[in-house]
Length: 485
Image 1 (cartoon, helix red, strand yellow):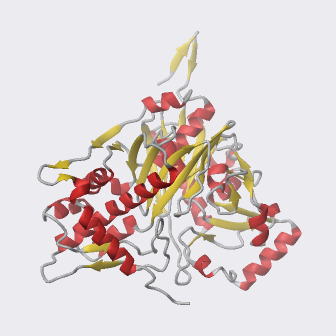
Image 2 (cartoon, rainbow, N blue to C red):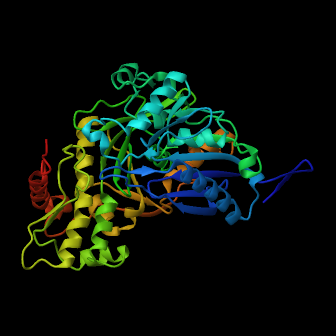
Image 3 (tube, rainbow, N blue to C red):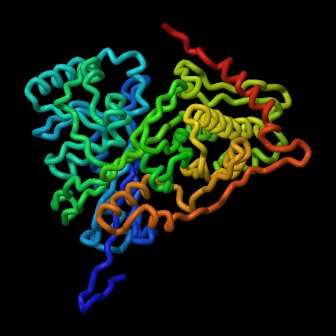
């Protein structure tokens, strides 16, 4: 809707936001009320050139990015000139090197799922290494994560930058000093000269070249996906927690203006830097959450993911069956990359329903594990918990998590929080929204899960205490399984 003031008509403007995930690229057009006016999605094709290697073709990714932006605007029925800002949320720690002059990649994106680093990366292929060495010597090599490459492409090579949230997830950035770590880069033989400039999360990164979308669009925010989801959930205050349950589970707590030093494997991250204000997060993750459910579906334990809640509640318990969800090892607090996925406690009476229930319970059990570590280490009182991601649509997992944590958990109406978070930051930069308090008023909750009590056995956590102990024994049995030298 256009508004009229003093005889002049002011055209309504909107925010474009793109989330580049592991399996898809999504773009939404948001209005001032944070409603989605148009959307478009494209698939991300993962490449597996060797066992354990997971790559993405950078040129295909770029084509997909342009396609979803154009598609979302077309779906909205609006015009590209009404887009006053663009925000980006990207998967973290996926990186690439390319020629700064030609823009030609030296290799595919090496994704965050890639396992070649576990064996200390002897090298990429020799020809790639030689090309890189020569380019570094010539001063023509750029290094960047996915956001940096997209910025470079959007601006036709004029911008080589990233933001603090993405940089802090690379493991070569000093989150305490807020700069690239000269020590770590020297240790890994990474020249500081090839690294992008680190900018604020809310920053005018320049505009997209007019040849791409027909008009220049200001790029007003760049964020890492989990930090963007945290911002989209309006977890702005110390003690706010969000749980994203998608391909993996990521639990983040706002630690305020101080990074958290962990001994159990929580990762200190820069949540965002807006102006002079820096917000830090501590993050624990459990890989394979959505992968375990997809695996069970492929085994035909169920045909539709929506059936799993009814299947799980059709039996009273899992009949002593425990599932260890470690297709990619076990993360904090056990931190064992050699752990195997397994079912334990199988018996002749075990049915498909027991197996499905055990899988769903394992997701909630890992949430409980991460939450306990977070409480124990940070000693920060929890102020609120919000959940998002595709797996949070499962009421069984949500309710059991609330019961085990003993806390209420809010589930938003829309689950695409990374996209919304990047849009919020971009909109603050353009002036579409004034401040974080205004953003909180735009927040919607689909359902609030309250901890339930069992009349016969007291609180659910107590009821599950023996089950949790047995499940933790199953974890121990699965550890160090792939113990090759």
